[in-house]
Length: 146
Ligand SMILES: Cc1cc2nc3c(=O)[nH]c(=O)nc-3n(C[C@H](O)[C@H](O)[C@H](O)COP(=O)(O)O)c2cc1C
Image 1 (tube, helix red, strand yellow):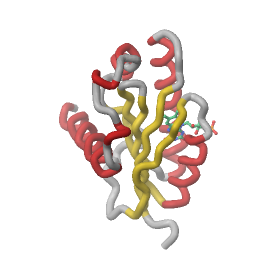
Image 2 (cartoon, rainbow, N blue to C red; image 1 turned 180 degrees about the vertical axis):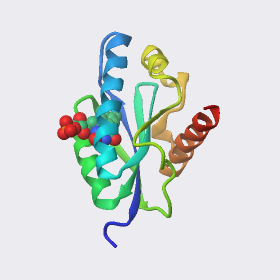
Image 3 (cartoon, rainbow, N blue to C red; image 1 turned 120 degrees about the vertical axis):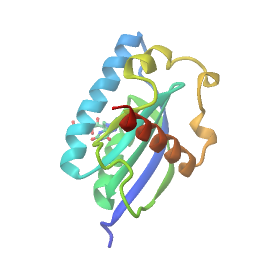
Image 4 (cartoon, helix red, strand yellow; image 1 turned 45 degrees about the horizontal axis):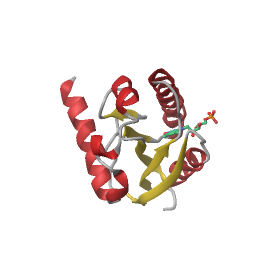
């Protein structure tokens, strides 16, 4: 019971400063590490970067999701980690993705990510459900584009 499928949604403020190249390298590093760790832990999900914020959905057995989120919260590459939703889920919504990157390409996100909130959505104004729907919709678009 305690290890049933759960879904977690959060957003945070990017703290990786510097040239777009540095941000691109940081995001690619986060994605590579996430994909390796999450595949082992049975965690799936998607990550988005926009307007200086990260938004992420994690889904998997409750304890695995909690462990991954513990590590993520301690990561100094972002701050003000705000949990928007955490609870049981009926089914996975990102089952093919140990960690997908959705929205702008990593390169574009790094190039435009430092623009103000007017350049994109502001996750602090969204509910967990709304943020989940955005990431899920973008993931479906990506899958259909293949
Ligand atoms: C925005 C963001 C999202 C992250 N997402 C994940 C993730 O989904 N899974 C993961 O294992 N690590 C993720 N990380 C990295 C963790 O904070 C941490 O660096 C990593 O899990 C450490 O793994 P290691 O102990 O194998 O070196 C993320 C980091 C950031 C900044």
